[in-house]
Length: 468
Ligand SMILES: *Cc1c(COP(=O)(O)O)cnc(C)c1O
Image (tube, rainbow, N blue to C red; front, side, top):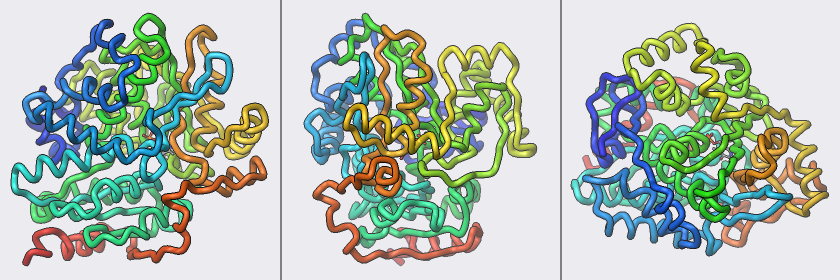
């Protein structure tokens, strides 16, 4: 299996190379040269398997020629051994043919753990074989950072730097990052928004000297292995609910378009997904796009679902690549235009193709609080604000009541206790492993939204500098 850049100008790479490269040298994102397909028989055979076995079957074709099956199986087993539910991604029925898939049973309580724990193991394996060390930089709107830190902490081959927007992540989220006492972990609060943090990371990748000197690599969802790790639970849920004989729909709380793009990938691999509900908060660039065909950047507005406070969704480019017939140079022109003007518009044919797969949905903070309250009243279930947006989207976009609708529960309610308490009067408790989170010491640095300052900070602490 080889991977190509969405902008067509970087050379195709193997899986292990893509893992370490992150963003392609032409500014594009890597995608598989073609989609491997699972037959109906292969999908049927996933039902009832342990989650780790489903993961192995789904991921194997993507790592071919780069990682042996035995090594991959070990990485997967170790990744999910730390999860606190035997099913790893359990399904709960919350209404007639309506399901919640709980993706918060990893060490940092969000769905990000499901791919990130795999990524940590993959990095260790590939770096050990090559005898290399790397610098990881990652931008976070809240949950990616802690998931990346838990996946990379105390790994000798990795120095990790996490940029979060100062004051714009919840206290639980911040403490999950800043209280980790590992020498290879560096937390940076940036005076700016998540989009600023993401732009700083892109800026570091687009600085060839800095990139080479620090052996820079990324674990944001621009890294293909993140998408791959997230594809697995779509297969696991669908096989449990009757695929391939039955179609399944999913509702996905969306920010950077990584999670929902993994659902799109599962569909491209042959999973019978009827449609995907693209649920956003007030930062609704993507749901507006599905209404109008215009992708138009706006200002980021802080909401109760901060992990979705994003205007520029990196992974959307991967979907656009397919919409533009996988013509990288054509897409490169479109992305350059978007960079310059903050807007691109799709023709009707492409928009219709997008609408066949995706239903857009938007919910503001008042609607989010109301949904958390209503679901609690009806089912006793406490939803975090991100999950609530997805559940509301699922209600609004049942295309066919006979098709099971699965809402992805992307975070544990205790990650966002204020919003949950406001809606239900109940304050959700943190799981035992995190019960003393508020007593632990914090470590972090605050830096201006300035590429030079951030590069200087990272350079001084990169693996080569540490050795010297
Ligand atoms: C990251 C995150 C999202 C958004 O996922 P994307 O892949 O960025 O679209 C939604 N909910 C939670 C809780 C998250 O942490």
